[in-house]
Length: 327
Ligand SMILES: NC(=O)c1ccc[n+]([C@@H]2O[C@H](COP(=O)([O-])OP(=O)(O)OC[C@H]3O[C@@H](n4cnc5c(N)ncnc54)[C@H](OP(=O)(O)O)[C@@H]3O)[C@@H](O)[C@H]2O)c1
Image 1: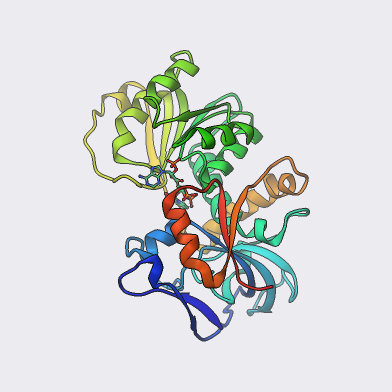
Image 2: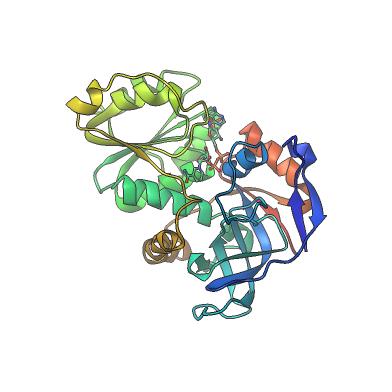
């Protein structure tokens, strides 16, 4: 099969199509003939040498795919050959075939294209795990999401509305702010034009927020803590601007805050299967009936994967970027 390899220098320019062995599904796994593969920021981090795959995972890039079940490993009863699925994969998505636990696949939601479906798993697994399971967002609460126009950010906007929570996002341009508001955000703040903490205080009449979903890290730490209300939760999912800083713990004690976070990829098969069960129950039906939206920004042929990564690194995109592997 063909897959995307990259050179030791880790640049987008070094990515190229390479011949390799087709993987074999093991116990409880399915082999997927990949039609589309989602591009995620962690792929850029892995290519650059900053995010090594966990032990046992494929070293090939790619954390989510949509395609056709091509073969079943031993013990798989819930899928059959030729089923069309979208799946979270532990690695290996940028390829003509990849394997993943059967328990991490979901059907293509009715009405969504295969390309759109390929961009669902990594963002929805991550957002559900961090905003619902860890962050415990409830109706009537207020969520602040940094990187509001990212794939993750748009899913978080949709989830907050789904739950009945208010959602405020920060973004790097007015165009992104307008898009996020049209996509369901109650407020969208262009952090390049103002101090987002002042603006959040203004739009919340000084109350602040219950949860912050953050991917920026160090420079936002003090600001995030200052904006959280009593019993607030800061959920860290990435450190795009650094992971080390100094801050005053006083806020944490006085306001009974929780500082937490998680990564998706190293979770166990059963932990991810539990998240899939929540998505299948609470999210997939509403993606199929149109109550929940997704936004596909651009599709690139697999051979143009370097262009796809350059677009992601430019941060010009809004929502998802996917690679067309077949068809
Ligand atoms: N913990 C986990 O399990 C997990 C899983 C998946 C993804 N993630 C993380 O979640 C984040 C979003 O992922 P994604 O694939 O949805 O990413 P994405 O679409 O590429 O979006 C990232 C956005 O972050 C904003 N940003 C803010 N500060 C930035 C900085 N210093 N450098 C670059 N961008 C910056 C940019 O928008 P503006 O220009 O508007 O600022 C950019 O568009 C990534 O950091 C990713 O690593 C974590």
